[in-house]
Structures are given as structure tokens and as C-alpha cells.
Image (cartoon, rainbow, N blue to C red; front, side, top):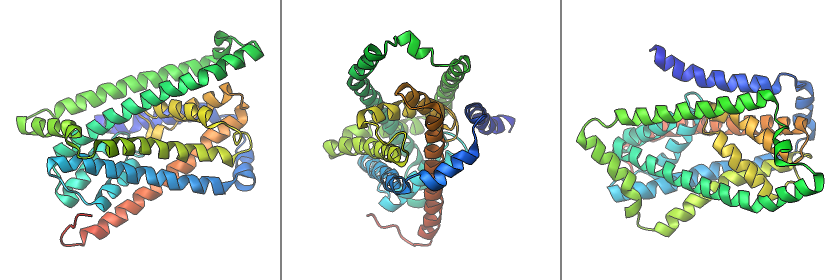
Length: 329
């Protein structure tokens, strides 16, 4: 019982500590003025479309990996399960994977262990893509950084000296938390390896990618997930005067760094994501005050979107429960 409480409280404590450190001296009256009077909300509302669309594309891709295993969940259920999983992870980090597989089991009778296997496959594919995209982004931005250093006379060592001592400490804590989170995930899935039937189902789920009928479509959808996530993030740049001139390639590198920060087990990456995005914006020349404000507002608003979509999915699942027989869509 005590360990379970710690699993919930420690991620919140880590996120809260980083947020307190970043925003301890901020004037929230000025922040509220910017949000209320200066922020271009039309761009944020447009970004919501791509935030929701990313979940739909993810559900479509998930269906494709389940079908070769003889599992035929409804698209509506799969979308609700994905939305609910992201909302649940705001409360307990990393619980979403288990919850969405459990939702398909409860609603459409999908094998829980096979679903877990397909989720593991999904994580491997997403990790491969984000690493590849990050490397391409770094290569595309290398001339920009070299030109910046030549024209300003700033060396790489001087660039990193813009970090404060506390900044290095926060980076170290985030990396340590990420390592602990990875060890926890490995140990949690090791516990599941009890019984050959369960292990076989998980193996089938992991290998389901080989049996997907339309391989090209699967990879298009996989790239589509990340494109939607990026547009969800990038359109928010146009909400603020300090960031509206950002190039898409520069913004994409900021997005990639933020995506890695989310791996740190805090609710929706709260704290590490703010720190990573703010740091990247400052490196690109944005003043620290608007960079901090951008990270806080964008993360807060987009987290609220996840919560609202999760509540909507929970309501929709309750309505679906009243239907007698599931019909494949």
C-alpha cells in the first residue's frame, strides 16, 4: 500500500519541485494579462484539432495491429480507450497503457495480454521514429547553430554556460528519474511473465506488426501521429509575439527535445517538459520571461485538453455500455 502511494506521490513531487523552481519569481498578474488580452487564442483552438486528431490516428493504427491477432475492437471503443489512457496518466504516470488495454478487454472482449503486446510494439515504433526524427532535426539545424556561433562569437562551452548551477541539477534529477522509471517499467513487465500462455500472447502482440495487412498505411499512420503532435505544438507558437516568427524546423527540434522530456515520469511531463522547452527557446534567442510563459501556458492548456477529452471518452464509454451487441466499424 505504501509503495503504491509513493508511486503516485513521487512523480507529483518531482514535477511540483521543478515547476516551483522555474516559476518561483514570476509575476502571475502579468502572465494572466498576457493570456487574457495578448494571446491569440484562435491559433490555440486550431492546435486542439490536431491534438485530438493524433489520438484518432493512434487508435486507427492500434486497430491495425490487433486485427492479425483475431481481435476486432470497435474504432469508437479504441478511440475512447486511447483518450482515457492519456487522461489517466495525468493522475498516475504510465498507467495509461494498462488502462486502455483493460478498456478494450471490458468493452469488446479483446485479450488483455495481446493488447499489451501491441502497445509494446507501438512504443518501440514510436521510440524509433522520434529518435530518427530528432537526429534529422539536429542535422537540419546544425548549420543554423554554427552560423549563430560564428556571428555571435559564442562557443559551445559558452552556450552551455547559460545553464545555471540549479539548471544542471534539475537536468541531472530528470535523467535520474527517467532511469528509475525505465527500471520500474522493466520490472513491472517482468512480473507479467508468469505463465506460458500469457507470455505467448504478449509475444504474439509484439510480433503482430509483421502480420499487419497494409504495412505502408501503418507507417503512414505512425508518421501521422507525430505530425499531428507537432502541429498541436507548433501552432501554439503563433499565439505569442515572442515565438510567432519561429521557423518550423527550429520548432520541430524544440518539439523533439520536449518529447524526450515527457519520458520523465511526472504527470504529462510537468516540470521536465517546461524546463526542456524553456531552455531550447532561450538557446534560440527568446528572452527568458516569454520562454517561461510559453512553456507554462502551452503545457497547461494542452493538459486541460487531455483531461477534457478523457472525461468525454469516459462518458462515451458509459453510453456504449448500454448497447447490447458491439458492431465493428
